Length: 554
Image (tube, rainbow, N blue to C red):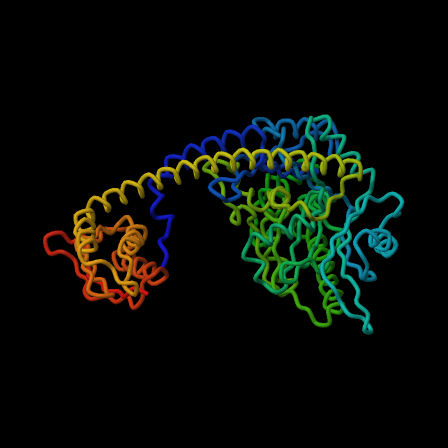
């Protein structure tokens, strides 16, 4: 057995470890090696922002913001003001910023393409996708991710997820971030953000799940199988459609009932989808049963579109069946929606909570009852990996790539500095170790000196036969092999056999390990037949073990 140097030098290197750690932390802060990640979701009705950093080795939410967008829906001025408000106190400089791009035309499709290198695949994917996206491919910004391979008629082909967004939508969003002085690292679709969320949650263990992300103006259905996107589709019913349905004119025994958009939105948030059992007027204007009659067609249409999507997926996947629906987005918290969909579809439906899958500092998450369902896209954006789909224009991608390369070079410089510091610390430790060993050898020499003198006298009197050991070399060999923890107290030569006795001081490795290492070292030298006679702890001091061994001389 060989001695473990880590245990011996631990007490010496510890002070240096703290110094190196402190310096490394300062250099890392200077160069921003561990950049924070900021996920941003600019929706129709609100802006959600979450900032995550590495805390104790885990990606942790440190700040978040939720700001409603007022004024006219779709107003860039209102969206910009809300975005700037949401970013107050969040430092985007040097951070990796990932945003969501979403509109009625933005989509993700699965296609099958010929097996070829990725550089050549770009053009093939664009050709295959032209019939899969719902708008002109000339007006599209596209990116793709290889999901896997399939064999079709003994030919290997690639399964590819292709995301596309209209250039106009992307440019409008980039203009918004430019005016807010935010530099974007990546733009990702809803489907990828939700896939990132699934990867961080227990839901990835579910074989097939469907996620319905219902915003104010866009609802998207995505089906995931074992955490990988299997189907994606926009649905024609969103939160604003339910609000507008409630503004339809009703004739009743009380006369004509007609709600404004503001009144309908308030009632929708307060009451949701009524059961129809209550009989009191809501806000003094409309009965719960009347609200139900107004919104029922929307809910039935939504359920019907989801069921059609499930049927299409089941046929495409040859029997794949969705086991659960998870609702996210502002519409997820509509009271009674989950129950209504479960009743219509006969599938388990639950409201998602994106925040339960991540670490968060105290008070890092805004205090809203609906935050868990509405932060899904922002959290998914913050969890995005750099090798995934990115719908930024190519020139901005290249700029981001150069930035990453510059940060990497700075990281290498930091590594060189730290390596030099560790080398210096290691040399210092080795020097101290050599000094310690030197002191031990000097003590060993002083202990053995009387016996060496006695042996020299016997040698000078009796002489040494040619076939006998040369004892001076023997003793020198022993002095070089004795570990620092071992002190010899007795040495006796009997012909070609040596008898050694000594003490072993308390060691982190244990007395037996030290003694075994000493005996192995003797065997590897000029000695043979090394045998242990006795070993035991001293009764008066259990931290010291005594031993006796014998060995022959080759």
